[in-house]
Image (cartoon, rainbow, N blue to C red; front, top):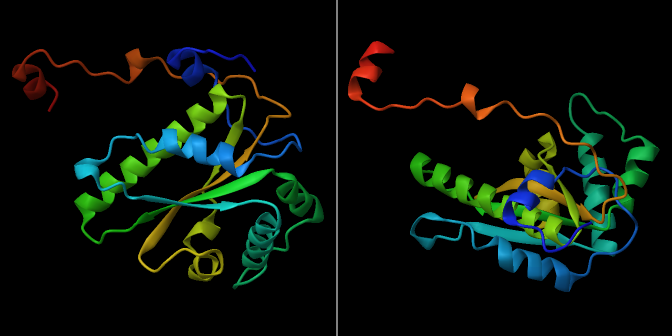
Amino acid sequence: MESNLTVEEVIRSRRTIKKFKKDPISLDTLKELLDIAIWAPNHKMREPWRFIAFLDEGKQHLVEVLKNEKEKGKFPRPMKPEKLEQLLSIPAFVVVVMQADPRPMIFEEDFAAVSACIQNFQLAAWERGIGMLWNTDPTIYSPTFHAQIGVKPGEKVVGIMQIGYPDMTPKAQQRTSVEEKLTVITSASQLEENK
């Protein structure tokens, strides 16, 4: 992976990585990346994020909890051995959590801030040749999952970040032109016409 990329190049080249090399990701590297990520904008400096890193035997615990979550409930689905093996081969996981404020406006501001933090995390990592997958599997809503991985009452899991050096980088997918997504208002009368 190229180094000394511009911000634009990092944004345009970043990809979601689903297949990682076995090379480990150190705790120091994760801390460095998270120290960059937390410079995300956040209303009134609430810094609504918290991180739980799973490395080494901690990864095995997280994967076991994920497996157990899939296999319980009304419609249990056993985790296939190849999926289990694939999860165990991922070098690092970081679970990103936020305090879930019951006030809708605060919740939305904090959720937006934590999402911006995650994007900073991904971009800082990509600049260093490290890829991620931002997983929002239904498991992240399970209270038993929360209890078993250290998520506190009143917290929301925003994502499980799978982290490692890319073994395969997918091609870019076309984006819709901004021309199709942009409305430009130059006078109030335009708003009246569009009603």
